[in-house]
Length: 592
Image 1: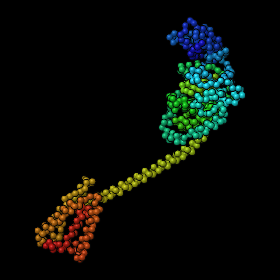
Image 2: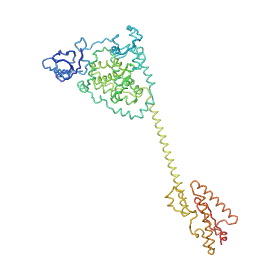
Image 3: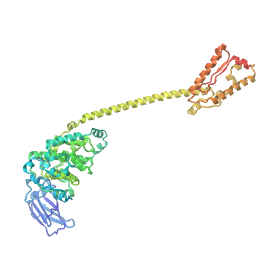
Image 4: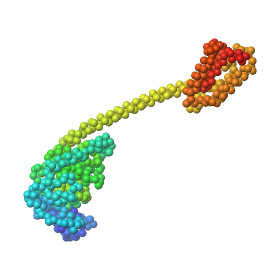
């Protein structure tokens, strides 16, 4: 027989059951309604439900069949009008177990081979090397079973990894889980996290946080939900057809857990949902090929088969693993994932079930992570449907009031951040000092060079003016070397030789010959000595030497200066003309 796809809805007075049974005849189906027991049969489909409330068959029921879609719809009145049937979305829990006519909890035998994972049929479909040497499998004795360590949902599994160690080596980090105690696994996990922590990666995400801020602004789908009652929760959370199909495939079972096992099951559920919340936020709701790795790596329950003793241990383990392994390692993502998990629990067990189904799908499509479904996720999907909503809300309140600080992670984050900030401040201060020093040097250099240029420019312009040039020529072409026909200005002889005014009786021909000689000498010196910036100092030196030689030549004759002898001294600028022309009284007599 095939269990058909089905769905249930309710209003205050009626329960509506929709059953998808294609390729059946409308005249060949049977219905049975008796209180909480409902049966439907249409070959080859058979459905038996144990309802959370009582319904009656009193003639007010209505049944329709959509031939095109193959959907049978039955609307049945409630025995007590206005009664709310709780848990109609928990489809697995509605399937009546074999041999039972009610939905009362059953005891599941989890000892021996029954505790091992199911799925041998899938393994038989794989290709094997038929020439491989084989050994006869023998059951372990009860004493050997007691020595094996427990793990999985509610610590109900053992001996799984001894047979599947090769396949599971890439799924979990703990070595030899069947022979390693819980305390040994915890110690090994802490040591591995200490080795995996990278201060450089952490500080890089801390100071270059543009990508982190973008992830923190992401809004997951459960953020739109509001804390509500069970009735409002069912209307707010909806399951897709694929999720409903997966719920129908689960086998309904009950779990006999003691108080400590139930407490650890709740804590492990928080741990798994924390990892899932981080995965959804880090991928912005779009799962990728790294999603299975993210969920199992960030959960100590899935990666190290960890069992926690208190809620703070769960938060510390999750926080350490976020700062050690994934791509984005920021403490703000830890607190954000905690807030998201609080929101999931506040939204009720229907929201939790939807998250677990998403995790189940992610693991189901990854090899070999699918084994984690058999160890944990499938059992959680079935178990969460039967828990009381009151327990979920209580856990949400405790988780919301929990506080996690950086010092709790024991990774010396505060000291690391303080040292990094001191280094950054020192670098910024050094950079600021260097910048201000460079600016000061640049301004002083500019001012000194500007003053030198202006001084040189002023001198050159003044010299050009003395030699017949102009200041405007210096301004118009500051980079062009000044050239002129003669360093001796072509002015009247009376300006150059004022002594001629006192010698009116001197012959004009001799005076003109002297001026012509002086002009020729000046033109010759102009051709040999071109003014340049590189030779300016050399020209000054030459001018100084010539002046000293001329003075030395005058001193033996007893003439101390040209003014005392009645002569005229003409000294052009050393930068423009190194020729020094001295005219004495003796020269005047010679000319006369």
